[in-house]
Length: 243
Picture 1 (cartoon, rainbow, N blue to C red):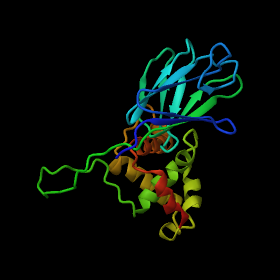
Picture 2 (cartoon, rainbow, N blue to C red):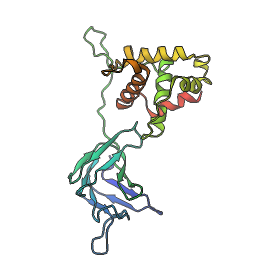
Picture 3 (cartoon, rainbow, N blue to C red):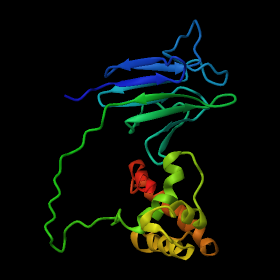
Picture 4 (cartoon, helix red, strand yellow):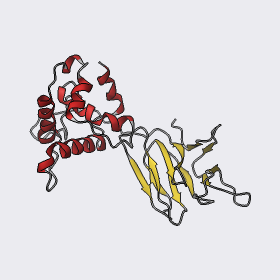
């Protein structure tokens, strides 16, 4: 039997925790004696009742009750995934099992966490028939290949910190992979070859207009964006970089 409902946890010490059964809601905001909230975010820039979390079976909805502030819901377990909740937006579905809700404040944002039940997935057995019209793999990556380690090194900063803007350069990738047996002696030219191979053959990223003079920059940026967007590299892959 699957657990339903959600848990809302504040970042205060000790943390405020609210367990919500399906159909139950919790409000968040600055609050006041005349206008109490379930989760207090004591910041003068946050509305007294800034929003509401509504539990719905195996997921939840968020409402932004601010007239002017946009909220952000991050997936701490993903590669930089987030959704924006516009002012006055009501009951937006949130697709993440584990979320960090970020509300703008005066000096720094306020935040709290929401834990939803594990998602349900269809049990579909792989049964390739070998025929010419069999379904092909969109991005056929070999996780044992050198190019996959290079792609992983490119994505590592974003996997470790979803808000990181850093994309490693070719020399930084060479240094990062130098200790691994499978990439010992890797040169800058080889790294650039693998990046170009990933861009042209494996992930098939397209050059933006006017990007020919900055080929390395757009290729690395496009590869990171696509790989994280489609979960081609994930946090568990980071173990491959430990040797």
